[in-house]
Amino acid sequence: MQPLSILVLHGPNLNMLGKREPGIYGSTTLAEINNLLAEVALKLQAQVFPLQSNHEGVLVDAIHEALGKHQGILINAGAYTHTSVALRDAIAAVNLPTVEVHLSNIYRREEFRHHSYIAPVVIGQISGFGVQSYLLGLQALVEHLRR
Image 1: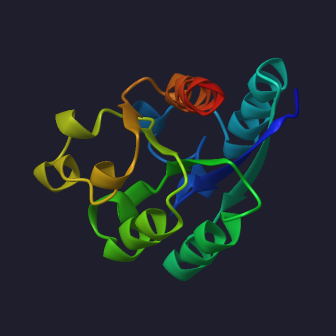
Image 2: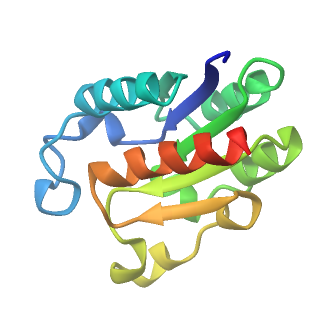
């Protein structure tokens, strides 16, 4: 079986994981999350290609470039979840199966975080389980792609 190729996108401020508000986001660094994703992907016969950017356009370009290169996208768009029609439109445009993940439960936080522009164009959303949100999201995406 050919390994699946999964683009993993991390949005703004996620490069600060481990330092930024550990009470909300935990103490695991982005590098550690990427390593855990790579380990889980290997077991699932998949490969992950992580990219973090604080710049919306870089994320949009990466989504566009995923077409024909990756079979799916795992995305934590960070604050862009609640503001970016551009990311939503890019995901809709490439029409690749995408799973949205969040470390914290966005629905137990500030009201402005309750709305996701991305949710209507993804196959599913997992939030509130810390690092497990990423790992569960990867597993769900791979299972969806294998069906």
